[in-house]
Image 1 (cartoon, rainbow, N blue to C red):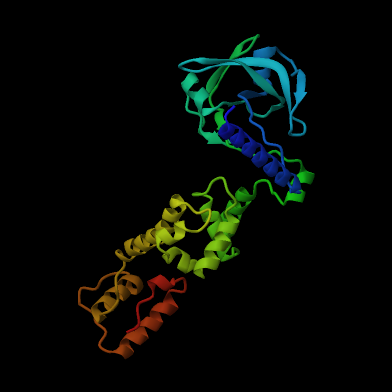
Image 2 (image 1 turned 45 degrees about the horizontal axis):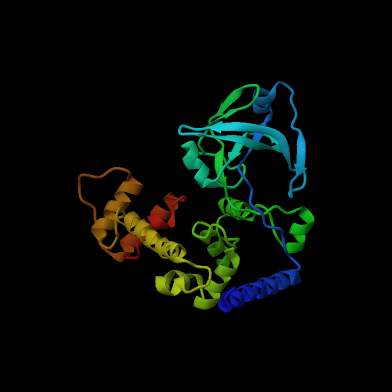
Length: 313
């Protein structure tokens, strides 16, 4: 072996040892694995594929408590090909699901979207063939979004909360933006540009760096991209939000009448108070007359919104 190659191998061994030693110091560590293609079945599909009342045969427990690999296998058939001996995982679920890789999708002739397990809305279907029959599901094929399985004790120790993003979205839909701090609003917004990373520290860094929510949206895209964890897509999203708001305001104001003359004020009152347009033109002859009719208008229209009130004379 050449000395240079030997030196490289020694360096790699040293590097791996140092990395392992550092990882062993961590209080919060989890095993990492790659899940092979597999199938989850509901009760009805289990009966069709393996016989009425059949049960899964536990072969090996998985890292996730209560989950296991079963002896039962099926063949999944798509428009272009098939994948044989796909392992069924237990226990049975409420809806059947087929988890494959993107490459498997090319073999089958389907396009599996990257989804969390159980999020099957809009996913393609597939045919599954078992020893006792076959079933064609209308949806359920996904490429699993990378994820982590934790028991409740470990999750609590690590400060990890299941469904955090969904709870934040629901809180916004239920209560609006007022209960949120500025960094929390940015955190939720960044969900849609940073799908696989904790956006809370990124949101904090944005507020700390630029000083305010308004300053974040006003910052140049190049400056936003320099924030750690914030890529080009997120920078574009942050620049897009105020521009959409500006266009919405301009679109709404294009349909409004500016009450900056007595003629326009008179027309406004005739349509709102008198409900009909008199044949004889009517004009306010003085600010006092305007004030009188304005007060009458307000008293007669208790449900008047601020956007409907005429501008000051």
